[in-house]
Length: 176
Image 1 (spheres, rainbow, N blue to C red):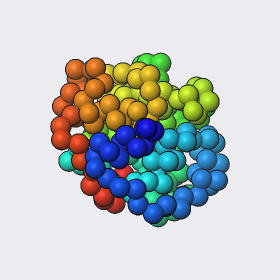
Image 2 (image 1 turned 180 degrees about the horizontal axis):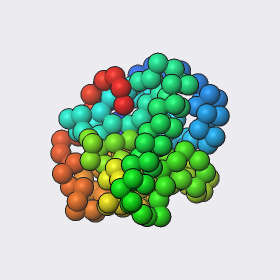
Image 3 (image 1 turned 90 degrees about the vertical axis):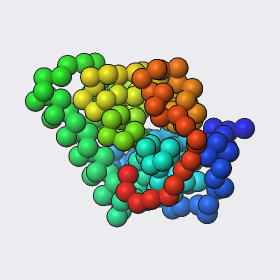
């Protein structure tokens, strides 16, 4: 069973019709090729949230266009880095949509940013879970879908993230 099948079974969701996403524009704009599990997730799930609207996944369909999605992602990364710099937050992680940086793929409320560490080929990207200004950071050795499943099912093994677990659910919504 694939991670996408596991996620759908976990939240009791059936796969809707395929959603058209302009991957050429997005990947060119980010200057990164994105992982296939993320693309499969976006084709199967509309914009929405898990765990009573606690966990959201960045979704191009929530933006007016692929170009707008790229702009939003770049702006988010820039704002985080500028705030970190102004607060003099140091650390090894840099939020930037370039090879070797962190690229957000989701959020847990306003408390946590779910990112890829983009230092390797996309199919090998691991997740990084962090507070917005990297006060707390967890390097998580799994891709986006496997990390999402672990967060929803409460099986990350990270005590600080146990508040996320509960009855698995998904609700469709707009915005990311």
